[in-house]
Image (tube, rainbow, N blue to C red; front, side, top):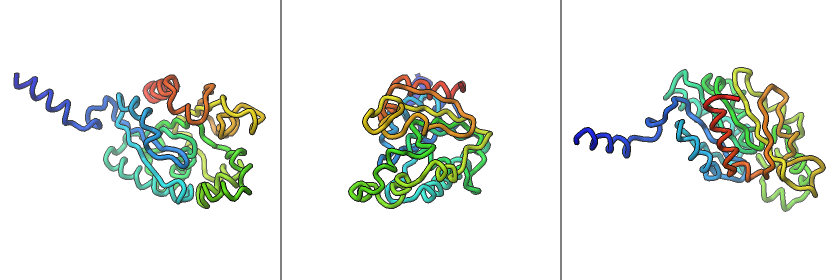
Amino acid sequence: MKSIFLLIIITFFTPLSFLSAREETVVCIHGFLNTYRTMYSLKKVLRQDFCVYSWSYESRGKTLGESGAQLVVALQQIAQQRPGIPIYFATHSVGALVLRVALNDPACPQEAKIGKAVLIGPPNQGSGFARHFQDVWTIRMLVGDKTGREMMTYTPEDMECLGSFPPSMEVFVIAGSRGSHIWFTEPNDGFVTVRETMLLTPHFFATFPLTHGALLRNRHVKCLIRKFFLFGC
């Protein structure tokens, strides 16, 4: 009887991080003008197997470089708590760019460079859609003069300057193809084209007939991400 009571106490009061079946931490990084809450449904699926950490940043008030530097600090803390254990990442949209900046920071821990990363709807080569509105002052006021300005002005060449993923990482890009037929002339998710999500370095790739936001909520996408983290492609 005492053993059953002890098991109940452990189950209900032990942090999820200690109940996780895997040692790896998955860091979820949201997109532009969003918060960690947008990653909740994905986090709920992943924490069945991993310790999941939702990292949030002030996307409108900081540049990609500033946010990347802040992410490095968080990664250093995770690496100190779990030395030698790979850190995984699940990013949405601009969150992928913040991650690229962090991984190319000299202070980024090695644990972050030997894990896996899933990039959901990432503007890896920028967004022609965003650049289309760079001269519209109302849009400029809305997105701000930090990351918002960068997204409205950065070309594919500028995006390459953010750095690339290290070859020691497995990277999986998931793109959406059910976007607008008015603003785009090729498959897109309403924010970036399928082509713009691709990296110039080796990576796995999948496309779903979904919009930019719907990629985060789709059950099949979430299951595929979990499978990638558990077993790879």
